[in-house]
Amino acid sequence: MTPQELRALCLSFNGAVEDHPFGPETSVFKVGGKLFALTALDARPLKVNLKCDPDDALRLRREHEGRIVPGWHMNKRHWNTVTVDAGLPDTMVRELVEDSYDLVVAGLPRAERLRLDRP
Image (cartoon, rainbow, N blue to C red; front, side, top):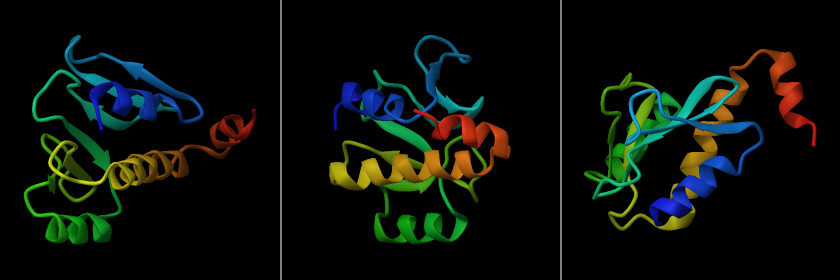
């Protein structure tokens, strides 16, 4: 997955926006004002911080040692850092991004979730 594909994927979700609160080199993707993905799109290797269910986070780290690690500068229980260009299938990266988005949306107030469901 290229940096452009990762950016397009993150922005493809309902209500997703890109912000740069940490400077122009760091893209922060949010929904409802809440972070679901954080990446430096120009960095090599390409990595992205993604929210994850704590049990799944541990399993993924075991199964993909070195490619999925505890979230850098994040709550290690709920966030993973995924090295996108470390041999992980694009379909898996897409699923991890979508899972992160879904977890964040699930935590939003009901009224905000309903707004996201509208076309």
